[in-house]
Image (cartoon, rainbow, N blue to C red; front, side, top):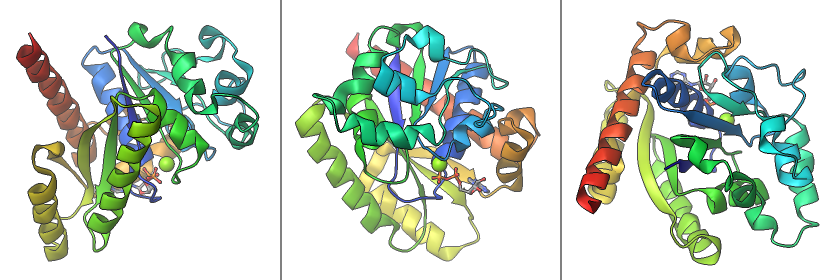
Length: 261
Ligand code: ADP
Ligand code: MG
């Protein structure tokens, strides 16, 4: 059964998009069927998936506002071997248009309901704010994956985010859980990073992924090449880290299903 994961953090530049693109490609490389939805008007996940955000014919706008059929909008089998619902400036218009609708919080959830089970994983790349697009992502999602940098104030921001997630869950999506907290752009030589990382593990325990994403220039370069890092430099530490994360996510899911059986 398909699992919908919103990748969210109201802070910009923490690695949401990088995580979406590289995790989607890594899971696809392990033969999972993956869909990535670019819900950020900046369209970075679209460009990073090798799809030109200026040239693309269909975007999430049509899914959210026009209720066009999914098959019409989806870009099949991108260079990362996952499917994509593209995003660009039009998605800003969707945010405004959404306000006109009754039940505007659950437009994405309704749009995904008929196709959810075609995929093993659906990732939603959220914009760096808690607007109606993010609310739609969190209403549609089974869980939220939170990428974060281990720096001063990170814990404070995280507590606020988790507070918002639980409030939102109560209002529109009672089943919403935290999928996991991912340490990104990690530099083990930095003492502050290590301190924050320790605190994170104390507070959030098993929710913190064991896999750590290092600061790695290949991850930053890959988008200009229009591909996930594993198709740009598969030997890079960044590409390997996201493959390890995919493995961790698959193992966690298997353990949960054994417990439930
Ligand atoms: P967000 O989507 O949260 O705004 P991005 O994924 O776009 O964050 O990352 C912000 C910037 O940092 C981008 O230029 C990206 O290429 C770079 N970046 C992200 N993760 C890493 C990493 N692990 N190592 C080096 N650069 C990274
Ligand atoms: Mg982004």
